Amino acid sequence: MLKLFAAVLLLAGVALAVDNYDGYKIYDITARNAFEKQFLLRLSGNEAYDFFDLPRSLDAASRVMVKPEDQEGFEHLLEKYNVNYLVINENFGESLRKEQEENQSQRLMNLRSAGRSVSFKAFHRHAEINAYLDELAAAYPSRVSVQVAGKSYENRDIKTITITNGDGKTGKNVIFLDAGIHAREWIAHAGALYVIHQLAENFAVNSDLLKNFDWVILPVVNPDGYEYSHTTTRMWRKTRKPISSACYGTDANRNFDFHWGEVGASSYSCSDTFKGETAFSEPETQLIRDLLLSLTGRGKFYLTLHSYGNYLLYPWGWTSALPSSWRDNDEVAQAGADAIKSATGTKYTVGSSTNVLYAAAGGSDDYAFGVANFPVSITMELPAGGTGFNPSTSQIEGFVSETWVGIKAMAQKVAEKY
Image (cartoon, rainbow, N blue to C red):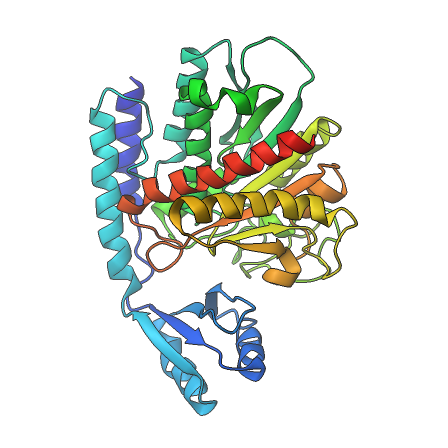
């Protein structure tokens, strides 16, 4: 019955799919000096341009998506200031259609198999992810439990899974992991599912990670936005609660009540970085707030998965100043970066959010650290796939297994310290 329900959802997703990206181009822009970097920073304030990545360092290209009617003016502006650019995708819509077909094929193959509701060869829908959590709770009742932590604005169940070693001890320290605050970052959801898979289904290999810690994992923070990114607008980032007749959604990672709205967030409700009408205006951020506060004292490591950019970031996001205990966070993050570099050669940049990437107040990591008193709080930005937010299905397994190497190393470092 579950497989049939998932198949109906799958076919419904195809019928609803809307292509909004025909003729959209994606550019890589390389700044050669501080002036050009500042020029790009100013351009990123224009809502017409979707900057996927705007790194601080001069040796890293910025990536931006521009719709057809804005391309001539955009290119003219870059040429006027003699800024180098490269078109890396001439028609993003065409790329997305091919990727959707491949993902569809892989999901159907998984539905026909006798295995779990999810695999790591496809990006799965919210219902399939929730079904997988329930399957694990049924398969490993002594070690795994699933709770409906709350409802999204559109009344979807937001589930957490708690994984223990089954020894029955209560009050253990906790590692809390979430993913999918931003809807379009599908590889983050897959990364969280892989952590769940490793801890629950490969318990014998990973039992040391559960000896003194329970893990609480929320793999889809923003299910409304996530579903919308599957059915309607692939690059949708925000939640889906309407703000006005024209604008929907809030950037959930600008909505937490810690230096809310001070920097790096927009007051314009149509903006991708809209901070919300008030702090904690969204049921999804209220839910994370309540979970984090319920773990105060026991919660030792908060990890939130995003994409993209190969970063391990720690507080603060609202200021370039560092907290007094920044070295503890840096040590844990560096352990993850070192493990990944050793295993695969992939380089992660480590540092505070503001100093490494950009200032943005109202994030979940700052709130976990500054209010819920998690001593270690890290945002992990997974690698880019495709043109950034759209890895191919063939890239999923490599990315999530690499991510697990870093997460495991960070968890081991936290266990040493706490």
